[in-house]
Image (cartoon, rainbow, N blue to C red):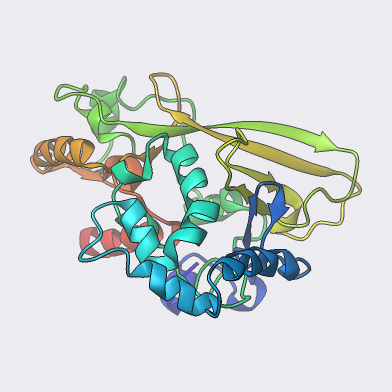
Length: 309
């Protein structure tokens, strides 16, 4: 996803040939909301609400519910209600978010939900960006094309061989966990990790979409990815991955920084240490302890490269 042509071109992507829109479909209590074929189910939900609040249209109902939040939202729950009202929040946001982050929405920062656009339309598109797509062949192929003939060493722990590897370069770009870089000497930052269960199904289609989010609290996985729909495959079989969110522990792969008040204060202390490392650039979700979307982190990387080079 990108709002300007330069980023698209810098990635070597053809604007005319990468039009895969991010259309994440939500489910709630077994029903799928807002597919092109399933609009009546979404409207059934609103019919139920409207029956309880006579004489009010859905948009008006949302506006009334949004007024429950006065002043600046203090947490994710208040931010979500201020954007979409109580009913949509409780049906499609609360369960998924608490399952994803392992914390009550009242303990999560408001900015997490601010990144999502809100539209009262039948448009399934996840974002509002002018250009949207994914690299044909996947991100691994895109990165390989960008690297060209640059030497790549796999299965190397940078922190274990830091002195030798640092000697090879004038500048080091570090995208691992910032607390790990400093040996956790100020304490451990918290992260969320992700576990995948992948299955090959002997059928051409499982869910008809690349991603379906399970917004209820009871379903143990957060979403199911059906990989063929990223490039609209026509294979006779299909591969799905169920995604489970969990608290990070040593040995797990950290995915998401937990930017609550406690962790943000600890990160600020690590950031002061990072600022004294003249040779090292800290970047990415883990290096900056920041929740980045793909377009934002690529934009930050390109901006950083322009400054350094």
